[in-house]
Image 1 (cartoon, helix red, strand yellow):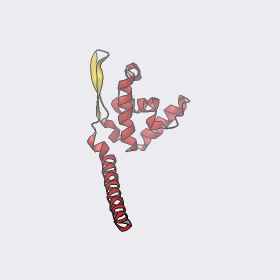
Image 2 (cartoon, rainbow, N blue to C red):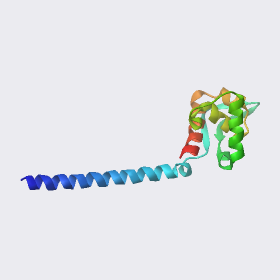
Image 3 (cartoon, one colour):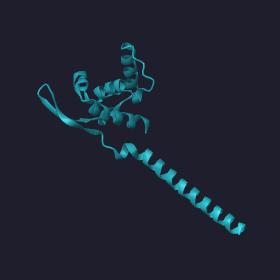
Length: 131
């Protein structure tokens, strides 16, 4: 009887290990392809008016064109503001300035967004840099 229990336990352990390895592989595949699967255009929850222009989405495809010089510029802007985020790519102020850089939209536009809309933009930028 103990031999039968040992065989069942070994078989169960093997199935569980295989299942875990399969789940890990699927997770790795999703994270490496996340930027390819998510659009750069962020739909806003409402239409905003910017000097007569109606804006209901923000195109962040300019993220692909950022260079090291842009990163240095962004760090200088934060230093001038005396603002030092601990996790800059997850910080709403830092990502707001990145969004301004890649969209050429003014600070007033981003400051007027609903929190949820700015968080959607910030989250997309975070995903771009961290995944």
